[in-house]
View 1: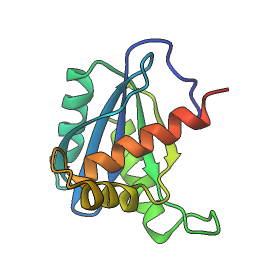
View 2 (view 1 turned 180 degrees about the horizontal axis):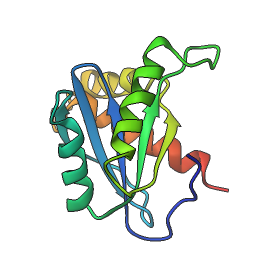
View 3 (view 1 turned 30 degrees about the vertical axis):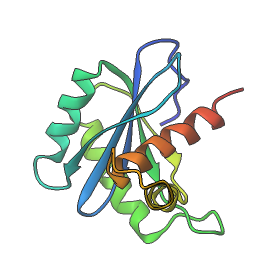
View 4 (view 1 turned 180 degrees about the vertical axis):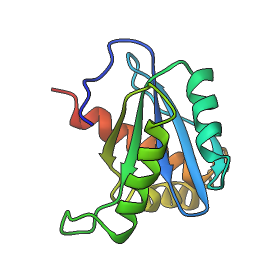
Length: 139
């Protein structure tokens, strides 16, 4: 699922959890992720993600994939890969993975240390996933 950074349009970031999916979007030009809504990880999740992607005119979807401290994928990684396969079957928007290591911890820390209540920790984690994608594709 390799894909080059789009030269224009928007990129959607997803932090897929067992109960909730954090969503963020960023312009491919400005590269400033903004938290969006949280989607319940239920039977409507795929359709809701596609609706948000269409609303945001997404050219790419970046899904966070968890890794442990050794860089190996975790037990949750396969369920996220399975979810992403289902999503890919329902849309023509390219989907890739980005390392989400510590994105949730960073998001919760931002909220706790800065008394930040403007977005959910799930959507903030999706912002950090997009940040990771931009950093790793800055060459």
